[in-house]
Image 1 (cartoon, rainbow, N blue to C red):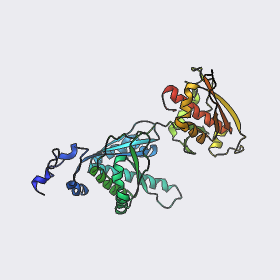
Image 2 (cartoon, helix red, strand yellow):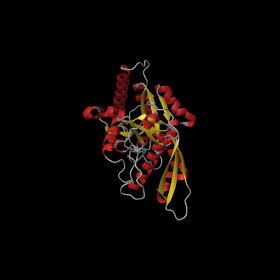
Image 3 (cartoon, one colour):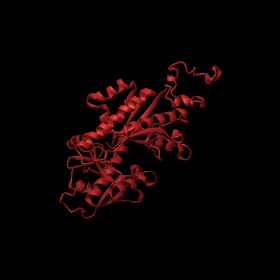
Image 4 (cartoon, rainbow, N blue to C red):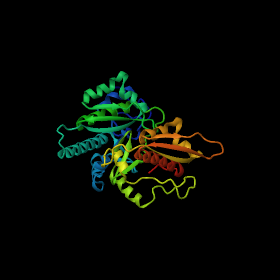
Length: 371
Protein backbone atom coordinates (compact mmCIF):
# COMPACT_ATOMS: atom_id res chain seq x y z
CA UNK A 1 0.00 0.00 0.00
CA UNK A 2 1.59 3.29 -1.07
CA UNK A 3 2.12 6.13 1.38
CA UNK A 4 -0.51 8.16 -0.47
CA UNK A 5 -3.15 5.51 0.13
CA UNK A 6 -2.68 5.25 3.81
CA UNK A 7 -3.69 8.74 4.86
CA UNK A 8 -7.20 8.46 3.55
CA UNK A 9 -9.05 10.49 6.15
CA UNK A 10 -7.80 13.54 8.00
CA UNK A 11 -8.35 12.04 11.44
CA UNK A 12 -6.53 8.78 10.76
CA UNK A 13 -2.74 8.52 10.75
CA UNK A 14 -0.76 5.81 8.96
CA UNK A 15 -1.12 2.33 10.41
CA UNK A 16 2.37 2.38 11.82
CA UNK A 17 1.40 4.77 14.62
CA UNK A 18 0.15 2.66 17.53
CA UNK A 19 -2.98 3.63 19.41
CA UNK A 20 -3.74 6.69 17.29
CA UNK A 21 -7.28 5.51 16.67
CA UNK A 22 -8.30 5.01 20.23
CA UNK A 23 -9.84 8.48 20.45
CA UNK A 24 -12.30 7.87 17.66
CA UNK A 25 -15.06 5.61 18.93
CA UNK A 26 -17.20 6.28 15.85
CA UNK A 27 -14.73 5.58 13.07
CA UNK A 28 -16.15 5.32 9.59
CA UNK A 29 -14.01 2.54 8.25
CA UNK A 30 -13.21 2.59 4.58
CA UNK A 31 -13.00 -0.71 2.74
CA UNK A 32 -9.20 -0.51 2.85
CA UNK A 33 -9.17 -1.02 6.59
CA UNK A 34 -11.34 -4.08 6.58
CA UNK A 35 -8.53 -6.64 6.49
CA UNK A 36 -6.84 -4.89 9.38
CA UNK A 37 -9.99 -4.93 11.52
CA UNK A 38 -10.58 -8.61 10.93
CA UNK A 39 -7.10 -9.52 12.11
CA UNK A 40 -7.77 -7.62 15.30
CA UNK A 41 -4.80 -5.47 14.34
CA UNK A 42 -6.72 -2.27 14.92
CA UNK A 43 -6.93 -1.32 18.54
CA UNK A 44 -9.99 0.91 18.58
CA UNK A 45 -11.95 2.02 21.62
CA UNK A 46 -15.36 0.39 21.59
CA UNK A 47 -18.35 0.30 23.90
CA UNK A 48 -20.45 -2.83 24.19
CA UNK A 49 -23.60 -3.03 26.27
CA UNK A 50 -24.90 -6.21 27.86
CA UNK A 51 -28.33 -6.82 29.31
CA UNK A 52 -28.28 -8.99 32.44
CA UNK A 53 -30.66 -10.29 35.06
CA UNK A 54 -30.07 -9.28 38.66
CA UNK A 55 -28.67 -12.70 39.53
CA UNK A 56 -26.12 -12.55 36.71
CA UNK A 57 -25.08 -9.05 37.77
CA UNK A 58 -24.60 -10.32 41.33
CA UNK A 59 -22.31 -13.02 40.02
CA UNK A 60 -20.22 -10.50 38.05
CA UNK A 61 -19.96 -8.09 40.99
CA UNK A 62 -19.02 -10.85 43.44
CA UNK A 63 -18.64 -10.59 47.21
CA UNK A 64 -17.89 -6.98 48.14
CA UNK A 65 -17.30 -6.21 44.46
CA UNK A 66 -14.19 -8.40 44.29
CA UNK A 67 -15.05 -10.20 41.03
CA UNK A 68 -15.76 -7.07 39.00
CA UNK A 69 -12.66 -5.38 40.46
CA UNK A 70 -10.53 -8.31 39.31
CA UNK A 71 -12.18 -8.24 35.86
CA UNK A 72 -11.45 -4.52 35.51
CA UNK A 73 -7.82 -4.92 36.58
CA UNK A 74 -7.03 -7.98 34.48
CA UNK A 75 -8.80 -6.93 31.30
CA UNK A 76 -7.98 -3.22 31.38
CA UNK A 77 -11.56 -2.50 30.24
CA UNK A 78 -13.94 -0.15 32.00
CA UNK A 79 -16.92 -2.13 33.29
CA UNK A 80 -19.90 -0.11 34.49
CA UNK A 81 -23.12 -1.55 35.89
CA UNK A 82 -26.34 0.47 35.76
CA UNK A 83 -27.84 1.45 39.08
CA UNK A 84 -31.28 0.65 40.36
CA UNK A 85 -33.24 -2.26 41.75
CA UNK A 86 -34.31 -3.30 38.28
CA UNK A 87 -34.89 -6.92 37.37
CA UNK A 88 -32.58 -6.16 34.44
CA UNK A 89 -29.36 -4.16 34.48
CA UNK A 90 -27.09 -2.85 31.76
CA UNK A 91 -23.40 -3.73 31.96
CA UNK A 92 -21.28 -1.42 29.81
CA UNK A 93 -17.82 -2.54 28.76
CA UNK A 94 -15.55 0.12 27.24
CA UNK A 95 -11.96 -0.06 26.14
CA UNK A 96 -9.59 -1.03 23.37
CA UNK A 97 -10.87 -4.08 21.49
CA UNK A 98 -8.41 -6.52 23.08
CA UNK A 99 -9.40 -5.33 26.58
CA UNK A 100 -13.07 -5.83 25.69
CA UNK A 101 -12.43 -9.38 24.50
CA UNK A 102 -10.57 -10.16 27.76
CA UNK A 103 -13.47 -8.78 29.81
CA UNK A 104 -15.93 -10.82 27.76
CA UNK A 105 -13.86 -13.95 28.22
CA UNK A 106 -13.88 -13.45 31.99
CA UNK A 107 -17.64 -12.90 32.06
CA UNK A 108 -18.31 -15.94 29.86
CA UNK A 109 -16.10 -18.18 32.00
CA UNK A 110 -17.69 -16.84 35.19
CA UNK A 111 -21.16 -17.70 33.85
CA UNK A 112 -19.92 -21.18 32.89
CA UNK A 113 -18.59 -21.63 36.42
CA UNK A 114 -22.03 -20.61 37.77
CA UNK A 115 -23.71 -23.19 35.52
CA UNK A 116 -21.31 -25.94 36.66
CA UNK A 117 -21.89 -25.00 40.32
CA UNK A 118 -25.66 -24.99 39.93
CA UNK A 119 -25.50 -28.39 38.22
CA UNK A 120 -23.49 -30.01 40.99
CA UNK A 121 -26.63 -30.13 43.11
CA UNK A 122 -29.13 -30.86 40.36
CA UNK A 123 -29.93 -34.12 38.57
CA UNK A 124 -29.48 -32.56 35.09
CA UNK A 125 -26.74 -34.24 33.10
CA UNK A 126 -26.36 -32.11 29.96
CA UNK A 127 -24.66 -28.78 30.53
CA UNK A 128 -26.71 -25.80 29.30
CA UNK A 129 -24.81 -23.25 27.18
CA UNK A 130 -23.60 -19.90 28.49
CA UNK A 131 -25.90 -17.12 27.27
CA UNK A 132 -25.14 -13.42 26.95
CA UNK A 133 -27.43 -10.68 25.66
CA UNK A 134 -25.88 -7.74 23.85
CA UNK A 135 -27.78 -4.52 23.29
CA UNK A 136 -27.11 -3.23 19.77
CA UNK A 137 -28.47 -0.10 18.01
CA UNK A 138 -31.17 -1.29 15.60
CA UNK A 139 -29.48 0.63 12.78
CA UNK A 140 -26.53 -1.80 13.01
CA UNK A 141 -28.61 -4.97 13.20
CA UNK A 142 -29.11 -5.08 9.43
CA UNK A 143 -25.35 -5.33 8.86
CA UNK A 144 -25.13 -7.98 11.56
CA UNK A 145 -27.83 -10.09 9.92
CA UNK A 146 -26.51 -9.48 6.39
CA UNK A 147 -28.32 -9.88 3.07
CA UNK A 148 -30.83 -12.69 3.45
CA UNK A 149 -29.27 -13.59 6.81
CA UNK A 150 -25.88 -14.34 5.21
CA UNK A 151 -23.70 -12.57 7.81
CA UNK A 152 -25.37 -14.02 10.89
CA UNK A 153 -25.23 -17.49 9.28
CA UNK A 154 -21.51 -17.03 8.63
CA UNK A 155 -20.94 -15.98 12.27
CA UNK A 156 -22.91 -19.00 13.56
CA UNK A 157 -21.02 -21.42 11.34
CA UNK A 158 -17.54 -20.04 11.94
CA UNK A 159 -17.86 -19.69 15.73
CA UNK A 160 -20.25 -22.50 16.66
CA UNK A 161 -22.25 -20.05 18.80
CA UNK A 162 -26.00 -19.55 18.48
CA UNK A 163 -26.81 -15.93 17.60
CA UNK A 164 -30.28 -14.43 17.53
CA UNK A 165 -31.27 -10.84 16.82
CA UNK A 166 -34.60 -9.85 18.40
CA UNK A 167 -37.27 -8.81 15.92
CA UNK A 168 -38.55 -5.97 18.10
CA UNK A 169 -36.75 -3.06 19.63
CA UNK A 170 -36.37 -2.96 23.40
CA UNK A 171 -39.01 -0.73 25.07
CA UNK A 172 -38.58 3.05 24.63
CA UNK A 173 -35.32 2.67 22.72
CA UNK A 174 -33.88 2.18 19.26
CA UNK A 175 -31.85 -0.83 20.37
CA UNK A 176 -32.35 -4.55 19.93
CA UNK A 177 -31.22 -7.49 22.01
CA UNK A 178 -28.75 -9.87 20.38
CA UNK A 179 -28.62 -13.18 22.25
CA UNK A 180 -25.45 -15.27 21.99
CA UNK A 181 -25.18 -18.73 23.48
CA UNK A 182 -22.60 -21.49 23.35
CA UNK A 183 -19.33 -22.43 25.03
CA UNK A 184 -17.29 -19.53 26.43
CA UNK A 185 -14.79 -19.88 23.55
CA UNK A 186 -17.53 -19.81 20.92
CA UNK A 187 -19.02 -16.72 22.59
CA UNK A 188 -15.68 -14.89 22.61
CA UNK A 189 -15.12 -15.62 18.89
CA UNK A 190 -18.68 -14.53 18.19
CA UNK A 191 -18.28 -11.21 20.07
CA UNK A 192 -15.07 -10.54 18.10
CA UNK A 193 -16.94 -10.95 14.82
CA UNK A 194 -19.84 -8.79 16.02
CA UNK A 195 -17.35 -6.05 16.99
CA UNK A 196 -15.88 -6.15 13.49
CA UNK A 197 -19.35 -5.68 12.00
CA UNK A 198 -20.14 -2.83 14.41
CA UNK A 199 -16.88 -1.09 13.56
CA UNK A 200 -17.39 -1.49 9.82
CA UNK A 201 -20.94 -0.11 9.90
CA UNK A 202 -21.34 2.55 12.60
CA UNK A 203 -24.87 3.35 13.84
CA UNK A 204 -26.89 5.65 11.59
CA UNK A 205 -28.74 8.56 13.15
CA UNK A 206 -29.28 9.03 16.86
CA UNK A 207 -29.53 5.96 19.09
CA UNK A 208 -31.95 6.03 22.01
CA UNK A 209 -30.32 3.66 24.50
CA UNK A 210 -32.43 1.07 26.30
CA UNK A 211 -32.83 1.81 30.00
CA UNK A 212 -34.34 -1.00 32.06
CA UNK A 213 -37.36 0.06 34.08
CA UNK A 214 -37.37 -0.34 37.85
CA UNK A 215 -39.25 -3.34 39.12
CA UNK A 216 -42.64 -1.76 38.69
CA UNK A 217 -44.02 -5.02 37.42
CA UNK A 218 -46.87 -5.96 39.73
CA UNK A 219 -45.70 -7.89 42.71
CA UNK A 220 -47.88 -10.30 44.63
CA UNK A 221 -46.99 -11.62 48.03
CA UNK A 222 -47.98 -15.13 49.01
CA UNK A 223 -46.67 -17.02 51.99
CA UNK A 224 -43.98 -14.41 52.60
CA UNK A 225 -42.59 -14.84 49.07
CA UNK A 226 -42.76 -12.13 46.44
CA UNK A 227 -43.85 -12.99 42.91
CA UNK A 228 -43.77 -10.82 39.83
CA UNK A 229 -46.17 -11.23 36.96
CA UNK A 230 -44.43 -11.75 33.64
CA UNK A 231 -46.88 -12.30 30.82
CA UNK A 232 -49.26 -14.88 32.17
CA UNK A 233 -46.93 -16.43 34.71
CA UNK A 234 -46.08 -15.60 38.28
CA UNK A 235 -42.36 -15.85 38.89
CA UNK A 236 -40.72 -15.94 42.34
CA UNK A 237 -39.07 -12.61 42.84
CA UNK A 238 -35.60 -11.81 44.25
CA UNK A 239 -35.24 -11.45 47.99
CA UNK A 240 -35.03 -7.67 48.10
CA UNK A 241 -38.71 -7.41 47.26
CA UNK A 242 -39.68 -9.86 49.95
CA UNK A 243 -37.84 -7.60 52.38
CA UNK A 244 -39.63 -4.65 50.85
CA UNK A 245 -42.87 -6.48 51.49
CA UNK A 246 -42.03 -7.02 55.16
CA UNK A 247 -41.50 -3.29 55.42
CA UNK A 248 -44.74 -2.65 53.57
CA UNK A 249 -46.60 -4.85 56.05
CA UNK A 250 -45.62 -2.37 58.77
CA UNK A 251 -46.78 0.60 56.69
CA UNK A 252 -50.01 1.11 54.82
CA UNK A 253 -49.48 -0.11 51.27
CA UNK A 254 -49.81 3.13 49.30
CA UNK A 255 -49.89 6.26 51.43
CA UNK A 256 -51.08 8.53 48.55
CA UNK A 257 -54.31 6.56 48.31
CA UNK A 258 -57.17 6.45 50.78
CA UNK A 259 -56.09 8.79 53.55
CA UNK A 260 -54.85 11.95 51.89
CA UNK A 261 -56.79 11.96 48.67
CA UNK A 262 -60.56 12.18 49.02
CA UNK A 263 -60.95 11.08 45.39
CA UNK A 264 -60.22 7.51 46.47
CA UNK A 265 -62.96 6.48 48.86
CA UNK A 266 -60.78 4.53 51.25
CA UNK A 267 -59.83 1.84 48.71
CA UNK A 268 -57.13 -0.18 50.44
CA UNK A 269 -54.88 -2.66 48.77
CA UNK A 270 -55.15 -6.32 49.65
CA UNK A 271 -51.40 -6.77 49.29
CA UNK A 272 -51.11 -9.25 52.10
CA UNK A 273 -50.24 -12.86 51.81
CA UNK A 274 -53.57 -14.56 51.32
CA UNK A 275 -54.75 -18.00 50.35
CA UNK A 276 -56.21 -16.47 47.19
CA UNK A 277 -52.83 -15.21 46.10
CA UNK A 278 -51.39 -18.65 46.70
CA UNK A 279 -54.11 -20.21 44.61
CA UNK A 280 -53.20 -17.77 41.93
CA UNK A 281 -49.66 -19.07 42.13
CA UNK A 282 -50.94 -22.55 41.57
CA UNK A 283 -49.84 -23.55 45.07
CA UNK A 284 -53.26 -24.75 46.07
CA UNK A 285 -53.41 -24.41 49.81
CA UNK A 286 -56.16 -26.85 50.58
CA UNK A 287 -58.87 -24.52 49.31
CA UNK A 288 -60.95 -25.29 46.28
CA UNK A 289 -58.73 -24.30 43.34
CA UNK A 290 -61.41 -22.10 41.74
CA UNK A 291 -63.35 -20.11 44.33
CA UNK A 292 -66.78 -18.92 43.15
CA UNK A 293 -66.85 -15.72 41.10
CA UNK A 294 -67.80 -12.52 42.87
CA UNK A 295 -68.10 -8.88 41.89
CA UNK A 296 -66.41 -5.77 43.22
CA UNK A 297 -67.08 -2.15 42.32
CA UNK A 298 -64.73 0.81 42.33
CA UNK A 299 -65.30 4.47 41.54
CA UNK A 300 -62.52 6.32 39.79
CA UNK A 301 -62.32 10.08 39.14
CA UNK A 302 -62.88 10.90 35.45
CA UNK A 303 -59.55 12.63 35.10
CA UNK A 304 -57.69 9.47 36.14
CA UNK A 305 -59.65 6.94 34.11
CA UNK A 306 -57.36 7.50 31.11
CA UNK A 307 -54.30 6.11 32.85
CA UNK A 308 -56.20 2.90 33.59
CA UNK A 309 -57.62 2.48 30.09
CA UNK A 310 -54.38 3.38 28.33
CA UNK A 311 -53.94 4.24 24.68
CA UNK A 312 -56.61 2.40 22.67
CA UNK A 313 -57.40 0.31 25.74
CA UNK A 314 -53.91 -1.21 26.01
CA UNK A 315 -53.59 -0.84 29.81
CA UNK A 316 -57.04 -2.13 30.69
CA UNK A 317 -56.51 -5.12 28.41
CA UNK A 318 -53.17 -5.79 30.09
CA UNK A 319 -54.86 -5.65 33.52
CA UNK A 320 -57.63 -7.99 32.30
CA UNK A 321 -55.08 -10.43 30.95
CA UNK A 322 -52.82 -10.38 33.99
CA UNK A 323 -55.56 -10.60 36.58
CA UNK A 324 -57.89 -12.96 34.72
CA UNK A 325 -60.80 -10.82 35.94
CA UNK A 326 -63.56 -9.31 33.82
CA UNK A 327 -63.40 -5.53 34.09
CA UNK A 328 -66.19 -3.26 32.85
CA UNK A 329 -65.89 0.52 32.87
CA UNK A 330 -69.24 2.30 32.87
CA UNK A 331 -69.81 5.16 30.44
CA UNK A 332 -69.45 8.65 31.87
CA UNK A 333 -72.74 9.95 33.25
CA UNK A 334 -73.53 13.62 32.90
CA UNK A 335 -72.91 15.72 35.96
CA UNK A 336 -70.81 13.00 37.61
CA UNK A 337 -67.08 13.44 38.11
CA UNK A 338 -66.56 9.70 38.63
CA UNK A 339 -66.75 6.49 36.63
CA UNK A 340 -67.85 3.12 37.93
CA UNK A 341 -65.57 0.09 37.38
CA UNK A 342 -67.02 -3.39 37.92
CA UNK A 343 -64.57 -6.26 38.45
CA UNK A 344 -65.85 -9.84 38.28
CA UNK A 345 -63.88 -13.01 38.98
CA UNK A 346 -62.49 -15.14 41.79
CA UNK A 347 -61.34 -13.26 44.92
CA UNK A 348 -57.75 -13.74 43.73
CA UNK A 349 -58.52 -12.30 40.29
CA UNK A 350 -60.32 -9.35 41.85
CA UNK A 351 -57.59 -8.55 44.36
CA UNK A 352 -54.99 -8.74 41.60
CA UNK A 353 -57.07 -6.51 39.30
CA UNK A 354 -57.54 -4.02 42.15
CA UNK A 355 -53.84 -4.11 42.84
CA UNK A 356 -52.97 -3.44 39.20
CA UNK A 357 -55.50 -0.61 38.96
CA UNK A 358 -54.22 0.95 42.18
CA UNK A 359 -50.65 0.59 40.95
CA UNK A 360 -51.57 2.51 37.78
CA UNK A 361 -53.25 5.23 39.84
CA UNK A 362 -50.34 5.48 42.23
CA UNK A 363 -47.85 5.90 39.42
CA UNK A 364 -50.11 8.58 37.90
CA UNK A 365 -50.67 10.45 41.18
CA UNK A 366 -47.08 10.32 42.44
CA UNK A 367 -45.43 10.38 39.03
CA UNK A 368 -43.49 7.30 40.07
CA UNK A 369 -43.49 3.63 39.18
CA UNK A 370 -45.71 1.36 41.20
CA UNK A 371 -42.92 0.17 43.46
